[in-house]
Picture 1 (cartoon, helix red, strand yellow):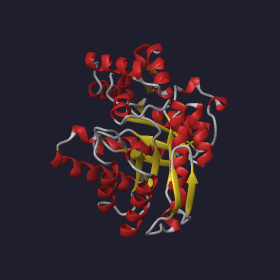
Picture 2 (cartoon, helix red, strand yellow; picture 1 turned 45 degrees about the horizontal axis):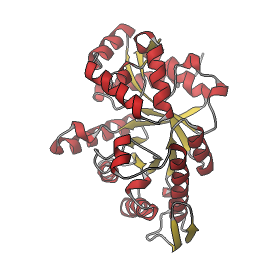
Picture 3 (tube, rainbow, N blue to C red; picture 1 turned 30 degrees about the horizontal axis):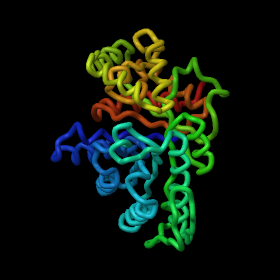
Picture 4 (cartoon, helix red, strand yellow; picture 1 turned 180 degrees about the horizontal axis):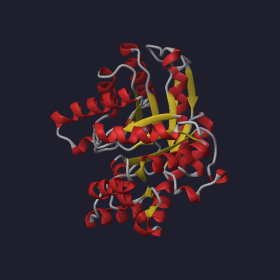
Length: 330
C-alpha cells in the first residue's frame, strides 16, 4: 500500500505563508511515513513544479506527485523538468497525468477537444515524455504531436524514473491507464455499492479525507464543525455539476443526493455537496475508519491519497486509523 497526502491550494494562503505551510505539511507526513504529496494544477494555482521543488528542498525522501496537464507545456518541457530536478537533487518525482480540468480553464486555454479525445492526446503526450526520459530518440508524426529526432539532455537516471498516475473513471481513462501501465486514481462510492466486478483494472488508487478520533461522536463533532452547511457552496456545486463532463464528478454528485445527510456509515459526501473539497471523507472512530480503509484495500486499491489534514495533530489521528487497518487479524 502506498500512501500520499494532498497539497493545500495556494489560493487559500498568502504569498508569505504558503511556502512555510507546504514545508510543514511535507515534513509532518514524511515523519509519519507517508510517501509523498499530490500537487494539483489549474489556471488559478501556483506552478506545481515550483511547489514540488520547494518540497524536495525541505525533505529528505518525500515524493512530489505532480499534476501534469498537456495544455501547459510540451512533453519535452515536462521531461526536462523531471530530469533537471533529478540531476540537481537526486530525487524522484511521480506524475499525475491530467486529461482535462475545469470548464472555464479549458475555455480560457482555447481547448475545444471532447472528453475521450483528451485522453487520446494524454496518451500520446505521456508516451513521448516517457520515451525521452528513458533516453530514446523520438520521432513521431502523431495526431496531436509531431517530433523528429528529439532527445533529452540531461538524461534521467533509471532509478529516478517517475511512477505514472491517471485520474478518472471513464472507459477512456481506463484505456489510457492500461496503455501507459499507470495507476488509475478515482473517487470511490460507498463500499456497499462496490464489488470486485465494479473495480475495473489493476493498479488502482483512491482519494479520500479522514477525520478519525478515539470515539465516533468526537469525530463527527469535528467533521460537522469543519464542514458546516454552506448555501453558497451548494449552489456552486450544482453549477459545477451542470457544466462538468467528468464521469466521477457526475457519479459522486448523484450518490451525494441519494444518501440521507450525504452519509453511509463512516462514508460522508457532505463536504463535496457544499463545494469544500472534491473527495469523500471517512469519519468515525479509529476502528471504524480503519475497517473502511481495509475494505478498499481488499478490493484492490493499492494507492491511497489523503485530503490535506488540518494540522499535525489531525494527521496523528489519521495515522492511528491506518496503523490499525494494517495490523494482522488475530
